[in-house]
Length: 212
Image (cartoon, one colour):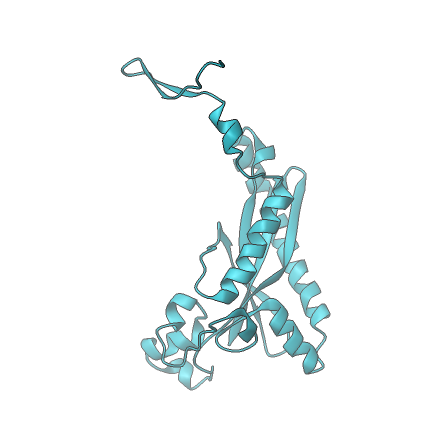
């Protein structure tokens, strides 16, 4: 059993605007699924049903990829490595990807009314906001994708060189997409950052020196 982590950036709610990242992760369970084994002990079946890294790394069957060149091996692949493997078997990976895109778009659309109300009430400056969603997608034996769940503020932690490659590029593209620029420390040093504590009437913070 395996599932996919698909990354979706939501940059606007009204109008609705989202971007689906074309790279992602493929996560494999470390025990082969079987109907007989599914009725076994909880400890044994969790390695069969769950693909989470935090769970499967504890299994003796877990195979960690030590560098990005090993992509397509072990218990975690990139999405592109999976698509290459599918094409090598004569499977139309583009058709599967279009279905995954359809799932992501329709899922976000279904939540649009609730998101709009929440943003309207809680976020006055909506142009400065974005959300990175992590869609977990299962592909069945008939090559049909199914939505498992959607994760808000999904983890960007890296446990391997493959994680680093995929997620570093994701973050770089996300910051470029949203227009966030690196902090200019020289400019920051020339600006006052002064706060007042209303309880004691004192000011604290960083005040610039007067120009000489």
